[in-house]
Image (cartoon, rainbow, N blue to C red; front, side, top):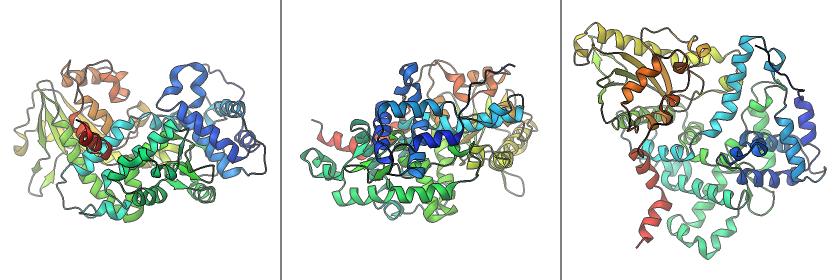
Length: 486
């Protein structure tokens, strides 16, 4: 295959171009562009494609980490030029286009950088309450006991997500800004009826706001490699605290699209693990397993069977078995998310993905064999129809079904796909075709079966997901609106 290789720009040139300008001059421009082209608005024309959130986030990162205030002013044209340079940054793949391994690593880096910022904020935020507050775990919690959220956030989980929603709405409307002085205005009275000003301020300061000095320290500490071609794929501290102080009145967020992540299960996970360690992750994993069961129960034409205990050693099957007229679907739940080694496509990437998902493939294959052999505990599961496996992850592994990634996992006798919680939430609400039939059609296509699961459901009619709606409606601004409605 012939590849057209453009003139590439080194990371050093790109960083030097950003450093021409004072951070205090660039930050408001980045923030305004982000608010203007948020929620996918950058897709509306070819000329606006440069304003993608991942590019804006990196420009902000470089300016904060490497810039200083003894530089020049900046204009919208300067930002535009910088963003154009971003699209031409050098990459290992460009240097070795004939190497399949180079292509595979490139795809991992691109998906980790770009696709994570194109997930549905509504689904992510709604899932937080639906999973953590409205799902009952089957095991005794280690950390998530009454009052855990007050201890972790300084307020209840619902109010914490509500603060994230309000900060996000303000950023979109006000060019990336939120000023605590606005809490004193009459229009904010309904907000303060729900969340006192002191609580709102304390939570915002503790969990959403950083400054240039702290940013620089965290950015340096978070670097996994010293490779300049991988620099832009490293963790960006704005994901942890999206607002800055010291850049004009109130707080400024360079990238509005990063705010909802703070209230998502991913944001809750990192905040909780930083405080409580692995016990918090285990509690979330238990809830996620039960949450997947709640979503599967929405599958109207299916019977959902929980894990089966079998044998003298009380072994366990997959987490859920779904039986339809068309197939048996073996569902294994993994509360995992791509690590930095996957996002950077380091030499440890294969080891990491096997560690996180390998056991799930084996569990599915083992359960399929038990059904086929008519193990006595499995005789209620029909053996007269196709069997497939589905691994559901808490966060997306966007290209995990691609051939090069599938080859890194254990081989199985039945087709196995990986999907995210969001994919599952969409799948179970399809109304115009049997879901089982769609899964069989996908598995029988050698090309489509390597795509993300959502491709199989594109164009099909769906109803709203009632589990997500219940989660979304539990947040304070929706409750407040209901109280004040006639």
